Length: 236
Image (tube, rainbow, N blue to C red; front, side, top):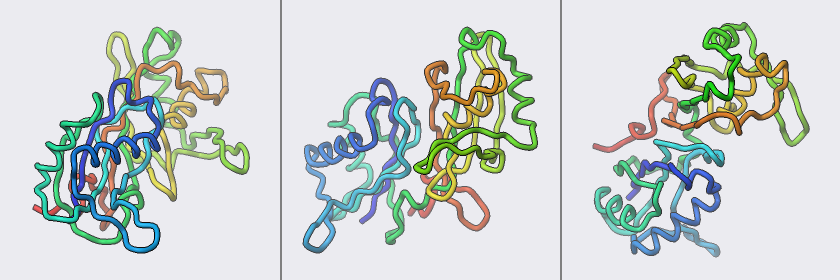
């Protein structure tokens, strides 16, 4: 049976890379004695699948993984057993059955929600109107590093929704953007584009200056609608 787990990645564990998170869960599954199913063949591997990797330094309220068990278990059992052995900052918030098919969880991801909080003390000359003016441009150009070098791209078509708010101490940007293997707009690249005018045209990484970035949701796309992974092919 296939069980989908929704979990958080918060606090200091946000600085742990994706490969180490995979190893952490593999160890937790073993310690919790969950009977994971294995693939067939000469090099069998545990049937554990993760959604889109999270950048180091970014927190998350909604990461996902699928596991296939050898025997029937209730999602609630799996959730309780894993939460008992997982480290601080990683906590399974939901567990539920999903339809069994051969589609990988990573390939389902087409969009993501992010919340970015900028400390006004680090951007003393920045205003909410400046951010809105950038977002309202017909094109939003930024330099992106790739295996073939650095190229300039227009990220505006990759922005699905975006809003800006502020408090006394911070600017708060919420973004829904394309994500996945075909097109992917991450929060760092987005902020580099938004802040390029503030930085006098410098498109360099500004990650050290924001207060926090949190991924809030991942989506699949089906019949013209973006569906949160916690609801996609979920079995009641």
